[in-house]
Image (tube, rainbow, N blue to C red; front, side, top):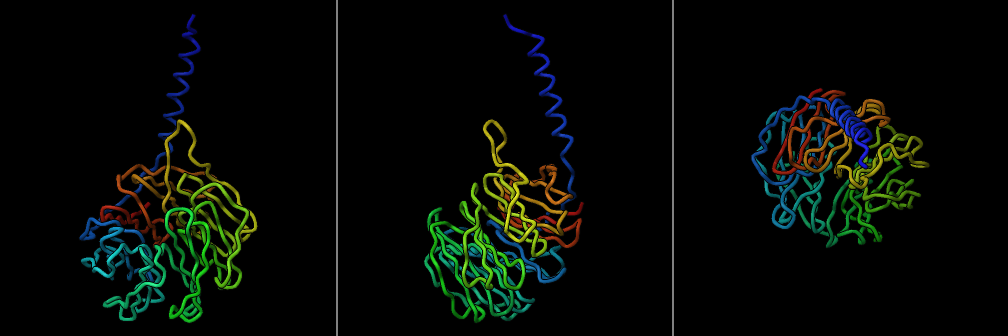
Amino acid sequence: MIDFKKHFITFISLILLLSACKKEEIELLTQEVDSHTNYQLHDVFFVDDSTGYICGGSKYAIGIFLKTKDGGKTWSVPDSIFPKCAYANFFFNAQEGFVVGYDSWTGYTNDTAKTFVTGTDIYSPTNAVAYTDRLHGVKVGGDGYANGYISATVDGGLNWTSTLYPNNFMAVEFADNTTAFASGFGVIYKSNNAGQTFNPLDVRGDFFMDMHFATPQVGYFAGYQGVILKTSDGGNSFKKIRAGNQPFSKRVHFETIEFWDTNIGYAAGDNGYLIKTENGGDTWKTVKQFTSSNLRSIHFFSATSGVIVGDNGKIFLFNG
């Protein structure tokens, strides 16, 4: 015999749970600005509150580059700088910087991005690049899941020394002048000598797409299958502050994570998914969806404002 009372209680509990989850959604005031393109926008980088750059494109067809001089309110018509997609950029100042992309395409400019010197050095995608000073830098990449590399330079990018690894790397960042981290398919590596050598950390469990260090000690890592890790001791230990995807639950795929300080941060990903924390990742609130495009990169101007970029040429200024 069917226990209708039991089923009714279960149904009511489910309704209350869904209602509670919905109440956790927060509004984010966003303004979409014109990118003059429908290509994917992979990375946004600002050298100050006015001057910023975005790179992107199409994997096999084109690598594009955009500029702003007014804090992201308007952007230049994209320049075609690579024959393949541009994945990341890093600038020392408004005049000088690097852009990297698919098939290891690398571009260097020293004239406020009017022109680029381009070329390749490893026939494999370069997914990220970071420098700790003008001479010491690291770039990472790989193809698929099982083939990756880390390259280091000590002469400002004139020459690179590369090491191959069995894992694709998606992100690299310097936590301080000598400490760097590289993350990718199921791994996080650490360097204590400005990126000259890296050693694996005891971390597993996701394809770690991006990271951000709010201080030399406090860093966050976002995984494609929904995991977010936090270290509070410079990578000596990690705490899982968001569990990964579970059966019968909504699947989340993170592409990027960014923090203003050790408390306020966002993690974003596919289909416009965006969550916010105001207490260092102890709790997260879902931002009400404002786009269905994949979100790929975030920059903060302040604790409450910034810019988010993603697929289909989407650029959003946000406040809230």
